[in-house]
Image 1 (cartoon, rainbow, N blue to C red):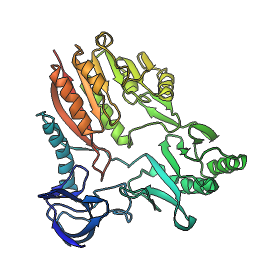
Image 2 (image 1 turned 180 degrees about the vertical axis):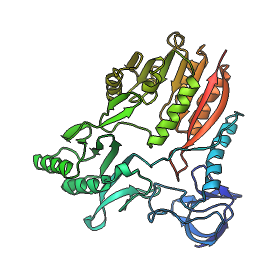
Image 3 (image 1 turned 90 degrees about the vertical axis):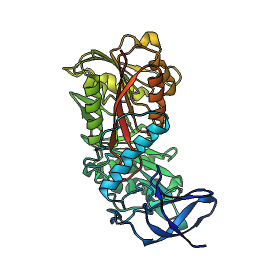
Image 4 (image 1 turned 120 degrees about the vertical axis):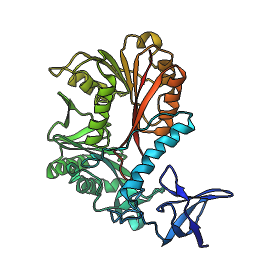
Length: 412
């Protein structure tokens, strides 16, 4: 059954929303004010599939990618830059307000830079056993085969071709594969997940692919298959030897912007805790002026950070492996720091935030990729007596609803 709807607004996931009497209806690929023809999505009474834009918005533009609308990677390539940027900033404003937080929110900083420096390609056997390599469809398990992706950095050139070659070699395993590619200073670092045990013949074939595609390193679930060069990344004064499938900020510019804001917020602090530190994008830069304690639950990340921290020109860095969800720092441990920086995964850091809130740490710098958990954690800090400064939204996930946020909180 075809319906005609007028889109009222955009939701926090980037879908058009119609505010009906029975609740909201979500229509991906639409913009506020548009008149559209839609059909029901089986099993999802609150969702509709877009058939036709009968009356387009003046803000609608042509997407930059031919796969847009089918591939699930981007949600908003069809929207002009100015309203898109205003909406993304407003996501942060609205989320804070819903948590009872009234704070100044800065202008959205564009941190897309050259584009994404890490990507995960999916490889599956589709209809008639045809190999498909690409990205997941929107809200579906189907793989959309792609020939290019315009949001990837030039440093990832060759990653898709390598992923295809790897998938063809591992095709006989009949298993769904995930191929993670990271652009490093020394070339592509690729880790393969989901293949199961490899035969000697497959190992030889994969080693040849690493040579043919000039990969810095090729691993399977972290286990080395071939290495032509050690994958490294320069962070401040230190060169970090990256673990396989290491977590990094999505873009080089995103890391630089976040680090600049974190360092400015820490000011002249002489002892800093960097919680959920990863391989040290903040810790290694902070260590140019402060003694740093860096903590993360990832053994490999901490080992890489510990090694990199030996670079000349850095003050001492203590890198510690610790599960901050189960074993957060307590008041006695926190009191030795002038500043605490925390940048947790999307689920936030509820337990750690509550303990920081009851501490006397003068400066707290909150970094997050999830506005909702950021607001929850900051609410705990405010309730503990901290004063929230300007919240800065950062867009390194262009065309998606995801937004990074950074804020400084102080306590006398």
